Length: 353
Ligand SMILES: [Zn+2]
Image 1 (cartoon, rainbow, N blue to C red):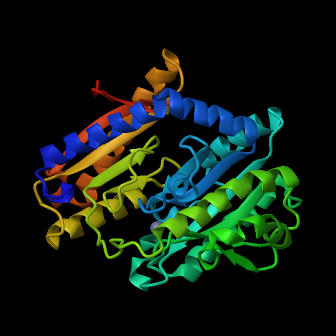
Image 2: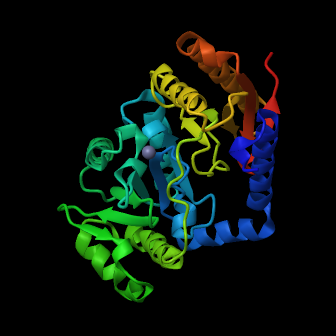
């Protein structure tokens, strides 16, 4: 029986097992060596703003070791760099990189499906033009914070076509580079094309973007002609609130609400409405859904204690929103609260005080 049809208790166990597997893989000597070596060769810090949609798995689609691309995920891929918490996290990441002598590549992504409009981004009612316009708006905000010359922080608008997993790089003058239209034989020509498309991109950032594009070229080519289950409908049964959900890259399983928007009740309400609709349409069993709150921490002591408190707050806040706006759903909720030891990606469940 597929996971989304199983009783809620079994689904939750399977999800927690997945998170343990993810941490085991992440902590393996080989994965650690791969990350260290990759960062030594490609020191540009890569940050990616993206939709919570589980299909958008940039490390997988670009063949990049896990832990290199720092994701910012939110429902609909909707962000505003003026949001206080998001702006501070972003600026901290940029400051860390710059002090270490590295530039920053800020990938601002949107997604769509070429084969079927309704497989597009739910956050923009499947309107690819609106999603792209929003990405450009974030780019302008990034320019306002980090400078229009793009010498240290390069904001790159990037489309993700979910039928082929291909990236579409948007250049400075409106031109694009669609990797689904190229074969691996074009690999040697990518650097020249990229330089033409983004002439203001600093050479070191271009050097560190190229492996992502080459990886995507190979990934897209490997998928060509394979049967893919594209028509997966909405069957999410998990609402995630917080950060540290890297292990959750199953398509149409979880709705991830980052802790970024100053009005968290809005995306939480939207996520609850989607789960309720899934149950009413019979796409998932109506025996329950999971609310998973998580916060990453780096060190034991105060850092971990505060992460615990933050997760407890997020879980309680989300439960209140769901009880108020979707009372019929509230009594079917199983709440799990966790912290994630970031260096190992180990998810640890915590009890509410
Ligand atoms: Zn989306």
